[in-house]
Amino acid sequence: MKKISVLLAEDHLIVRKGLRTLLNSEKDIEVVGEAGNGRQTVQLTKKLSPAVVVMDIAMPLMNGLEATRQILQTVGTAKVLILSAHSDEAYVEHFMEVGASGYLVKQTAAHCLPEAIREVARGGTFFSPVIAKRLLDQKKKALALSGPGGKPQSMRLTSREVEVLQLIAEGKANKQTADELHISIKTVEKHRQSLMEKLNIHDTAGLTRHAIATGVIESSVQSTTI
Image (cartoon, rainbow, N blue to C red; front, top):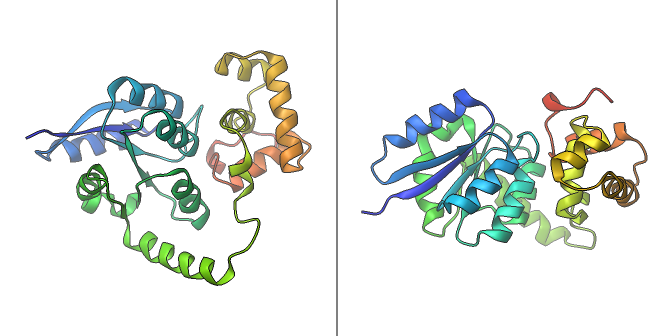
């Protein structure tokens, strides 16, 4: 029997090890790799081609949303299953829009993570009950109130702009951002200017608040610019 290959993307080592222990007890699931930040997750997905990526939301260098977007654009065979402490509507909506196959809240993951992995590996979807109910309610509301301007602001940003936004919100200077993304400082400045124009935000503190509000980073990893 071929096992379902899984990559764990979680920046907290203790949580990651706990997930590995849980999944190692399943005969049909194999953890083939672990990643501690979003950029490493994208790189390892390309290298290892796992069937399922179990993805946390708030990770350094690149958040789970952007990592999911890049994985699904470049590794067509991979499925992404979100595993997060957050069940906010905005988080769920953003991940569903980029193509995640499921969304679990960590509080209930121990009971249903293996089942969720099997379902998304088969091409299906899987959601924690509280998320599933909310998605149904949202769909009903959308049918009743459908109209222009439905996409959130962050979805109008390019992938590179989202990366720059996260690094700005994490308190990185232009040079640090340029070094991290392997681009020039001038290019970073252009992306920063584009962010400010698109979002109608004209200072670093405002960009940071926007990043937190839209789930690009968590408030626990925000910079000191607010």
